[in-house]
Every structure is written in C-alpha cells, then in structure tokens.
Amino acid sequence: MKWIGLLALLSMASMCKSPQSGSSSGPSTSAFDKARAMKDLQMFAAEPHELGSARNALLANYIDQEMKSIGLTIERIKFDVEVPDPELLNQDASMMRKATLTKSLENVTATYKSSSAKACVYLLGSHYDSKRLSGVESVGANDSGSSSAALMEIMRSLKTQSPSFRCHVKAIWFDGEEAYLPNWRDGESRHPANQIDNTYGSRFYTSSLKACDSAWCTAEGDKVEGLILLDMVGEANLTLSDDINSTQALRDLAKVVDQSLFKGELFRGVSPKGIEDDHIPFLRKNIPAIDLIGFENTSHWHQPTDTFDKIDADSLLKVGQLTDEMLKRLLL
Image (cartoon, rainbow, N blue to C red; front, side, top):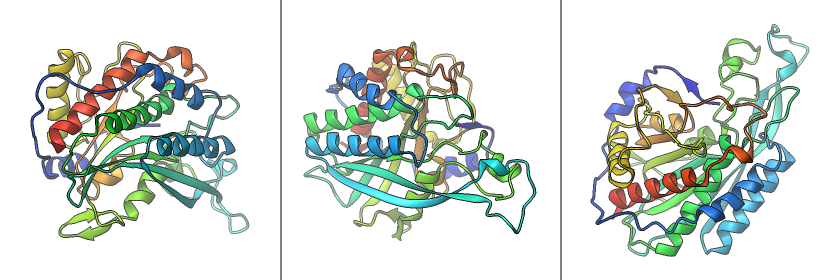
C-alpha cells in the first residue's frame, strides 16, 4: 500500500544533497528485454505472496538464482519483525495476550560492480511482497510484481552493457512494504500494538547503514549516494506520479529524461502529490531518493483484479529505459 498525503518530509527531501547531473549522449542504449521481464512477472503474479509467506520465500530464491546466473553479487538479508495481530484490530490492549505476531522476512540484493567505481553505491529498489487481503486473494501483478520484474531486467541490462559507472549499483527487493493490517495507518491508530505497520524491509535496511563522513555507508563501506525506487509500473499507458516527498533534483532529472526519451509521456498531466513508500526511510536519513510509481490509476490497486493480464510490457520497457538513462546521467 502507498499512503498519499503531505508530509513533513517534503521540506527534508528538498534539503537532500542534489545528485551529480552528468550527461548521456544520444538516446537510451538500454538492453532491457520486455519479453524476459514479462516472463519474470509470471512468477510474481502466479499466486498471492504476502510478507512472511512460503510463496514469498520461493520468490526470494527465484530472484537469487536469476541474478546469480548473470554474475551479480547476491546478498540474502533475513530478519524477524513483529506485525500487529489482525484479530486484535479495533480492540483495547490486554495484558493477557500478545498484540503482535512474529514474521520472518528477507530482503534480497544484487550488485553490479563497476570496475571503475569508487567507494560508493547507488541503490535501485522494489518491494516484492503482495498485499494481504482478508477473505480474498490478490496476486499483486502490478503491486508489486511489475516493479520487481522490471528491476530484475534492469540489472540484466546493466550487466549486458557493463557501463563504467563511478559507483556500484545495488538492486534491493524489499520484503514487507505492505501493511499486514487492512490499511496503512491501522497499526498506529486502530490497534493495541500502536506501531508502524508497513515498510518493514526498507526500515530494516536503512537501520543497518553506518554513519560515515556526514553520510551513510553500507557494511562494505560504500557511501550510499541515492535510491531510485520502482512501484506499480505495469499498467497500460503508464503515467508516473509526481511525488513531492521525493528529492527535487531527482524529480527534475526523471522529467528531463522522460522528455528526452518519450516526449514527456510518463509524467503527462499529473498534479504533485505526496506518497509514502519504501523511499521514506531513506529520506529520513537525508539520502536522496525518488519513487517512480504509477499511482494515478488505482482501479485495480489492492484488488483481486490486479492480475497478469492487466500488465503492459511496453510500460515495463519504458520504466526500464528511464531508470537506465537516469543512472547513466547520475553515474557516468
């Protein structure tokens, strides 16, 4: 789920360090294969896969195997979280019963290591858990299958092109972006656990970063320069939202690249809105971040109708090319 609203983070995002804006010559040379991305999407959209489920564990293995097969460096980050017990929604706290359930989650990372990179890394992200719905099934083909499959193909494209980036590029498939309760704020407002019930994987990942020279570094010592987050990018005639919580310099860059590649089609006619997603924990650490999310049409969002047949391969291709070109302008 993604929560829309104006946040105090808006001012924080505007203060984030601007990314270096290098230039790229000519049109995108992305090697993104939309047919291969759709094949990956079939895996994500085959069954529901809420956080902590056996199906989500299977998908973590799939991401691992596919990314490892092309020579990327893989890391599996397992962690336990406490989620609000749905049976206690709208009830008062009780000393007789634990208010939460323990779930085992896993973030998966795949790193493209540039031979010319300094000690820095740029992050790409997607959550890969589907929304838990009470009484019905939702496979989450668009939310979160589209972005997870697109991210896999973006990493294949990078490996094929082998660009000499000044930083490494690390893809992260976050577990547990979706709220376990029905709504994004229920854990804080309608449950005795009184806790944040969303963005578990991204919050865990950012908590593991180490302070370094007025910045944040990974365990390997690489400075985190920024995050490009993908979410809900598969609908036909895709329109990306203009998220005011995202770092202004990255919003500007995304629109410039969209104009260059697609004559402004992806951000056509949108009004700015604030969106809460897996980029928020990074913004809270003053790490530049942008959410490339198609949250303009929500007719199938968190519904049983969010199925594979609703996905347009050309939308995945465009987002892949947009992300590829943004990376080149940031890192070449």
